[in-house]
Amino acid sequence: MAAERLYLAVAAGGFRRYATYRAATAAGVFTNTVFGLILVYTYLALWDERPHLGGYDQAQAVTYVWVGQALLSTLAIGGGGVEGELMERIRSGDIAVDLYRPADLQMWWLAADLGRALFQLLGRGVAPFVFGAVFFPVALPGEPGRWAAFLAAVLLGMVVGYGIRFLVALSAFWLLDGAGVAQMAWIAGLFCSGLLLPLNVFPGALGEVVRLLPWSSLLQGPADVLLGEADAAGVLVFQAGWAVVLLAAGRLAQRAATRRVVVQGG
Image (cartoon, rainbow, N blue to C red; front, side, top):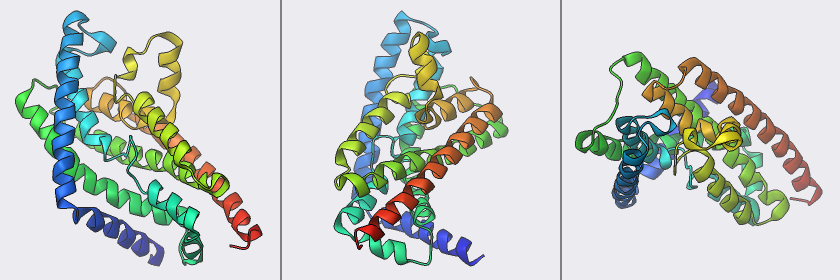
């Protein structure tokens, strides 16, 4: 119970930390709304030419855009999670303090990132989503069960996203500066999550491959659950599988990195 209380406190601290940046949050809401408008009108033009592209009707495509804007910062699809701070602590050597804490390194930063993600969802994600629902035709479910499944998919997406970014951050143990790896991961996230274009639109083998990658758990999976275009249980199992794989890989990388710190005399 003591460990659970510790990680809950860390998550609450992460939430409060981001809640203090009110001007940045307001600017983020504005940015997400404007970017959403650009994508919506692009999608409307595209779906006028190709109705039911990717299996979506026009209202579903518009809904997909606003779900993406709600989850962009929440899941740090384009970066902006705890990985930047963690990489800096590795580079500066302050990671030694983290390793001496009476808490697991991976779980500590997971808790902090979940607190950040929850604030971003409530503080930055809800407003653009509500704006889109008010001013555009959207396809939202009326069943509470589907909303519950969507929220569960978002939560698992948070864990999957963290699992990817934790591995990216740990690369700094070997590269000293993990900025290049982080940028490649962010580009992969923007493309393979479906943020720019739904993965259902990708043709042939490319579409099959990107839907099997972990980034599809961040946006495509939750969006399809909300839109009723995927079996909720199947999506949740897929996300949970990737969460386990990524966290296990992170655990192995953490052990290897810890041995490296000891060898270097850190």
